[in-house]
Length: 212
Length: 212
Image 1 (spheres, rainbow over the protein chains, first blue to last red):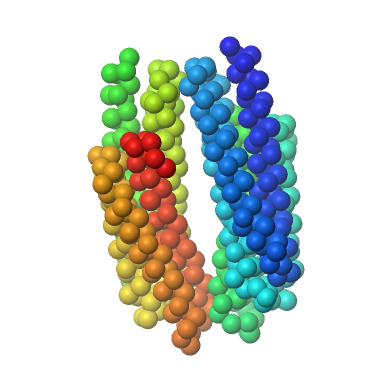
Image 2 (image 1 turned 30 degrees about the vertical axis):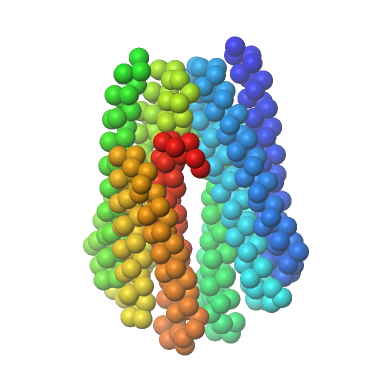
């Protein structure tokens, strides 16, 4: 019984890793769409979110099926419940990439990001990619060594988020209110995306070490 | 066995209703703190969030305990998994109230909301209260009749959210960038708060009707 359980669990973990790749790619493309005002890419991310949601539904059904059909022991049940939480985080990360893409689309053919913030937003996109890649590794390998790295990356994201506000507040702003609103919202989307990736990693680490 | 299960489930449902009241009260006080620049109230909400988190931990442990000790049948397991999801929504609603309170605290003794937006923010606070109250009723009574009302309230929230942006964009804005950022973020916090309350109601309705 436990052997079947672990086989099914391996399958579910593989799907979780796949879902992590999907939301990583979505945010990478959304960032390019935002910075380059690339409408086609933005549309790709927006329509592509349905694939993320489908994969979520599929993983949830499989996890639930294992949970109820196999009456797992407490430790194994905890793995399943954690899986369901990770799926929820990943689905939300897909939504946040979609929100970034929608900002790009709304401002097309204009650019949502003014020149003095291109650097900061580019870095936020890069940090997002670093964090989600590590979260994926943690899911795949349960490598808890990555934990401290991910916390440092999250600090970097928070730092960039504050820097965004500093540019908005400290210098005279000549790009109008719409750009200010877009930047404020995008800043929030990247920060939340990183938070969810950190949360994915923390959940796995909690499973392995029992420490929150 | 199933009788014990249902007794424990009733206890968990009572705690969920209590948690809904806590996050409703948190957002009500955060709204007053925001509109009246009431620092004491803001601090209350900020420190009070720990109570919400404690209740979440307690409900999660109890739900998990029922799930693993009682090997529930599939329908009952689905109730537990749904409970865990509702708890996550409610915890996030508590966080969003905390974020609103933090905006109020950061701007104290100033007011974060300029006069021409006081009406809209007041209404957003009221709609938030209506939605969370109904979500609480749905949790307590499983009254699916409330479903359509909640969707209409959510539409009202989206309408107010757009109105907020219209004021920011259409009229000359004389309150500076900090106020614009605060309003943009608070708008997002109320909208997300309502989304999570709608999600709570939908999850219960899904349990009762099997329809998503």
